[in-house]
Amino acid sequence: MDHYIEISILPNAEIEETSIMSALMQRLHLELVSSRQTSVGVSFPE
Image (cartoon, rainbow, N blue to C red; front, side, top):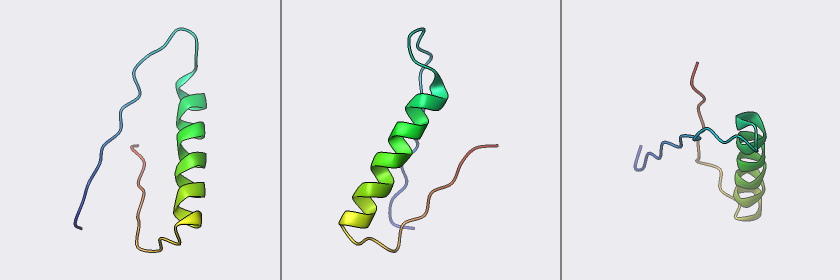
């Protein structure tokens, strides 16, 4: 593993955490597909 990024979602009264994470994962997926990246792993906390 060359790089590691940890993303934490801070509480927000106006937007649910699941909505933020969903939007983030969708954008990440689209960017990885468009840049043809195949050696990327994503893990989720328990």
